[in-house]
Amino acid sequence: MSKVFLDANIYFTASRSPAGGSSVICELINRRKLTLFATRQVLKEAKRNLGEKEDLKVNLRFYDLLNTLKPKIVHIIKQEAEENFIKIINQKDCLVLEGAKKAKVRFLVTLDKKDFFTKAIKEAKLPFEIVTPGELIKKLAKGKLP
Image 1 (cartoon, rainbow, N blue to C red):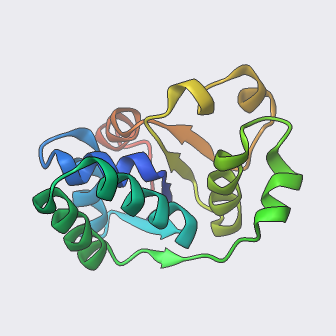
Image 2 (spheres, helix red, strand yellow):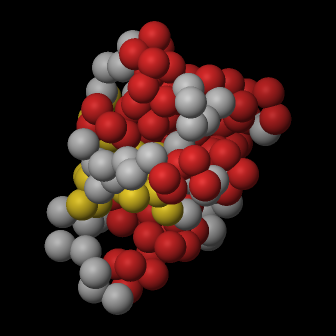
């Protein structure tokens, strides 16, 4: 079973759209096809963004998701995250990379192409692959995951 780390935008999008690719990833986690890891910082960001931008129904769906997904929480230290990744990504997203690294995941799933699909990230040779929900779904469909 592959281990995954979801960026805050995946939780946000899955909470807004029960039919999209982010929700499909969540369903695969529920079916125990993937093992989910998270950090408190990423979950807090998703919660804050939903609270600022969405109605009560969408916010409740977020809490339902967390309750069913039951992510394994990894502890990270902001200073270490920045030391490790500030040269290749913005300060906020250092925390995401650090969480994925500490969790020793196979995939970091994000919709943030602007910040995570850059030349600097590709050249960093991270110990995990960064993919969109659609890319991960295609890999699963082709049977390319254990």
